[in-house]
Picture 1 (cartoon, rainbow, N blue to C red):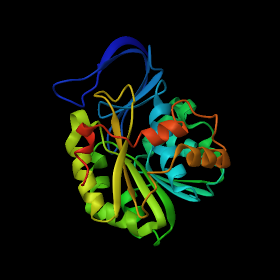
Picture 2 (cartoon, rainbow, N blue to C red):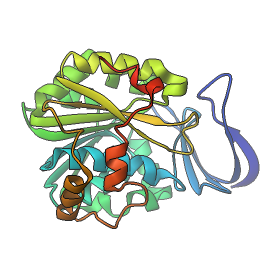
Picture 3 (cartoon, rainbow, N blue to C red):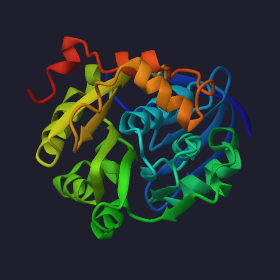
Picture 4 (cartoon, rainbow, N blue to C red):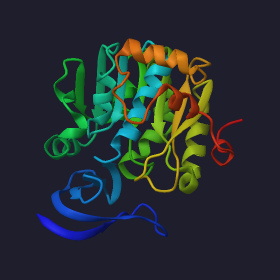
Length: 288
């Protein structure tokens, strides 16, 4: 339906952004949230959940590449990957670009997000849904990590909404305790921790929780244009020290081995390494 009307994002009461809608593609109230997908004039197709921008075709590569390639290449030998959320399929697609990955389990609580993304955002997921290594589950990520066997994954990637509403349970002590339990000896977990200029408490509180269950906690940054407020932080918690301190040459060699070299638009080995160099206004919210 052609509209040429404006949609205002509702994340912050005092500040925001808006999009001129060329055509509304879908508007669904699922059992969990309001889902809207529209075609914009500048950013391609856009998905909003409860009025908050989740992804745009124009800049999704920044977030997806950094959320995926950084942890997998920091680990260096990840064969089994668990994805929580990420119903648009973009993280699944990037995980499966790694030829070294043998199994990728994706658990998304809202089946309507998957259905609508497959129909209206096929460019984001590519052919990931049909990859034999992928196991896509419509279910509760909390329940999945609660019952998964010890040491059953090498990397966990959490692509959730902010810690409100349906995404709130993915920022709890119980979730991080079980995540640590089901990760292998050298395992790590990454999750989005918001834009610290506007959401400093999200990074601080999440880091404090992760620090109870992981010996090595930190964060790295990505500049995603539609996540307004400057750098977005991606929280990084590992069982093994040093995973965030590899040099560019090591990361480049791993990217070659995984088969992703030359396939990215934002991530490079140099960007990977520099992303962990945090400005003081962000670093101060991490455990000392």
